[in-house]
Image (cartoon, rainbow, N blue to C red; front, side):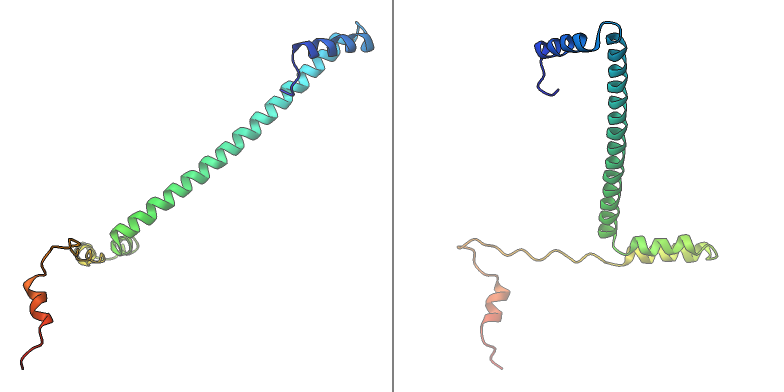
Length: 136
């Protein structure tokens, strides 16, 4: 614990026995044991409290990441669907139309076209024709 081995502990106990005396020595050991047990209990309480708080922070962070991921993946769909939860007076047909419109919106941009990086690849006929000056 503090770099104190068994020989050092025995020496400390012998010195304490000589100084304190044989009548009060067992009582002193009991109080030291109680103090160490209370210290251990307090440190375990602090440790468990810190672990609980860290777990809460991790859970909140994971929930935020999942929420951000869902919002990014589905774009405005979540926002449009949230409108349905607040508009309880809307008819079922209106709600279905809102859902259909939410999924019909293309919020995701298409991926960029890939360009061939092969040196021996020939250009397409469209690009060859566009490079030539027009005869108009």
